[in-house]
Image (cartoon, rainbow, N blue to C red; front, side, top):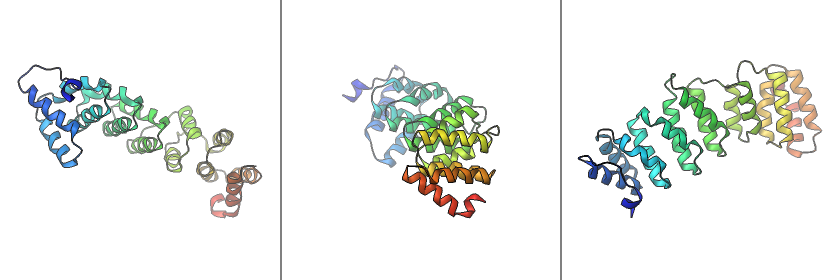
Length: 240
């Protein structure tokens, strides 16, 4: 059944062995076995080239197996096919993609990988947004002001928001720009903890403006916002 579902388009010597190894990789869940199979697959000339057509498969296990081979071999010719999977419906597939893009983003000349990582800042899965933001920090990537604000406004995770603060573009001025973003986040009912990340950044530049926002929050009808305002006003360190 697997052989029918996963045809390998090749007719060269060694094709049968390559196919058998790949089918074993699809089936096995044992990490040590996966590692040994990857080593064996890597010994075949252009193994990735033979397997790339399988990145159009509808089977998640097949896609994950091919992506494991791609990452192990590290062939750049696979990049366009891998990038196309950035919007795949399965979180596990997107997770494998963002990990591979992170590896490629270490090459400063690889703009495609970096740009694709930027799109992951808007992935519905918070874990993938977290991975993407860390990779972007690691490779020294930049964000446009528009994209930064959009990512910050929609964020719900504190650790991702903290990464975004570190990715803040030089042309984004914390006082005025942050106030607009804070207002947008409040209207979208974002978590108070994420608002605090922005307010802490604002207070490092304009403490008096941050205090004004905290006073406004203290009177907010949402209990978590009002508690945030109270805590910021009570904590002199946050406003210093």
